Length: 334
Image (tube, rainbow, N blue to C red):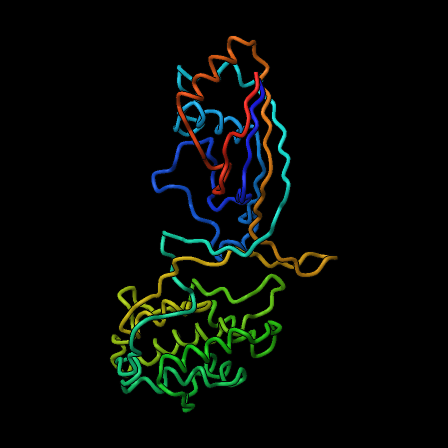
């Protein structure tokens, strides 16, 4: 028995982790096609027509709409004895790589955006301790190390505006790591002994400058608490919103100091840009294909007539082949 299927614009990528061959987790399979997730190794997932794809199509054609693993686990699975007798040949007539916008219904949060009005009058920016707290960010590296080790008074001034402060933090984040020696080492060792969560080194054992500044804010907050009431600066967990001992997160910082909170992301272009050794920058887009899928089932004529009757009775006109696209049976021969 020969079944010929024509298909158009079949998506050849997967956007969820896990496998169709397993029961769904309670929270569902995780969406791994966001801009952030795609940068992680293994989350750009190419797909081809496989034996499982073919079996899913055949089950669909006879009216079985269960997941393939569910059908296979059933005592009444029609293709239980027939699977070893099924072969296929996929003949794409074209393969395109297109920029496609993917909807992410889980509603991830934008890492670098915010909504609503800016709260420049929040107590953390208008209190008597504010200048000495945020002034830390205006110190140069030598001044910062002296502040950490010698507890010098901070007289530098920065505008008490959330946008200015987060912009300064972003500038500090771009600074190159420095060797862990001399005054920097003294400051690093002091912070390491003071804060258990502090871990300001990269893989080369160099000091991350941004981590020094972030932990210095916590150090200053502790020192200022001896003379000021700094409770208005702290979150319920006792820290600075969006700022940890090792870095900061813009969305968390701005969500506290804006009236609208965090901004949701409901989709993104499906594109991965990566640098490969010896090649340079490589851009991977959504792959879409159209063509013909030929399925051969090595059964006797009577069994073929039975299967043909089941297909005709189910009356499936069109269906997905893999992910999205359009597929239909163009020919069946016994």
